[in-house]
Length: 373
Image 1 (cartoon, rainbow, N blue to C red):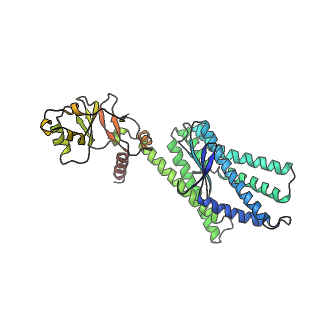
Image 2 (cartoon, one colour):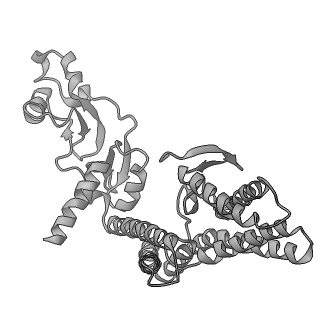
Image 3 (spheres, helix red, strand yellow):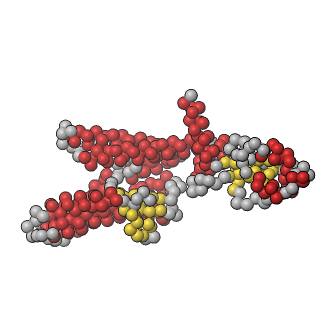
């Protein structure tokens, strides 16, 4: 998983940390430990130990944020594949998208809501109770971090939570989730460029606003927003076509009335593309399959007398899909098994052809070339 290190499980959810997390952990420990060393009552390595504790609590806040997303997703029947902490925070990887705009909104808003709630609780504790100055400083830091986490993630651009909120709103208005993703991704790119400019100007000493981290966050937003937009465009394109549009040209379909000799002469000799063929009736209804290698067991002297119907094998593990099924739904079906081949049939049961992930990719490439031309 991209060199991520598995730490364990949280509420049944696999928990990982990216190697970049250790860099941030060290930087925060050193930075905040140095600030705590200014307190006269802290001596020796105590400030650095407290700095490490503060850094771990900071990431615990990020983890709580991601658990907020995860618990709402689980309540909707969506599995959470993992939670990962990395350089810029955390990521909850969900099995699939929510089915409605409202459900998508609730998943998106849950993370910032948890962060803002933690901020309110921590500030309440600081105001209500008395603590030694260093402890109070750590609590105030955590409250401020959670406030930042909540508000920053509400910026209305992907891949931030605010972008997912915006996506759900556009989805509700247009009825199209992909339009929501594309729009929120464009907004995310605007904020990304803004952060890059601000960070760049600060590094050049032209502006006092921003820093090197602002620049990095800008590039992070640009990259991920671009990926989201591109993915949504592909899905939008796929949604405009059907399974029949992307079937494999000259799919291996033969009539069961053919003799073995006719079949070999017309479909096998000099043609090495297919080693297995679908056998159909005169009405083009799927009857079975024939493997070329299985014909070796039959004497060639009998090939003119024996029909494919007589030697075909029953259909096993052959998944059929209707020809008018959205190509996007087909792509999702093939996502976890890219080598799988699907038999495309019309409503009357007639076989149209075979379809696989490679044929979908080839179809999209051809469409892209046509549009460019």
